[in-house]
Length: 128
Image (cartoon, rainbow, N blue to C red; front, side, top):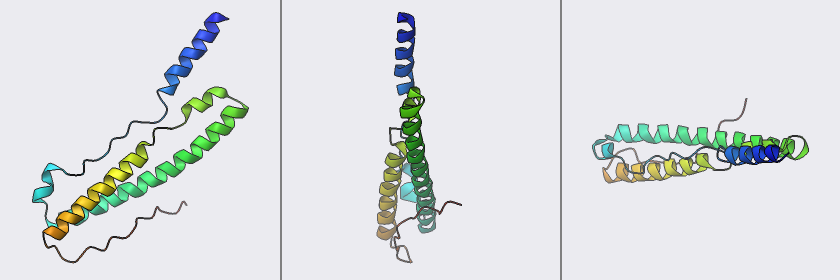
């Protein structure tokens, strides 16, 4: 009995470390920024916006998965609660992309690039 309890507790501690993934945010300023052309700045901002959309969609999916884990964990299988993504890596990464885009937009304007940027909020794609 004591062995079973010790095994369960050690499993819970081990699984708790697996909840979610570590954030890997993009750096706001990168070495290549100073030599980027106006076109390259726009392309980089577009790529970042696409990444933000993907992260928002991933966050929504994670929230849904967490809700399922809570329901299943509470009613049927307690260890399911330890598979919830709690670290919020996607949120931290999306915010880093937004800061990066703000820096790139500032550089674009400082270089006198045309046309003027019109920053529109990025909306996630509708689920199919």
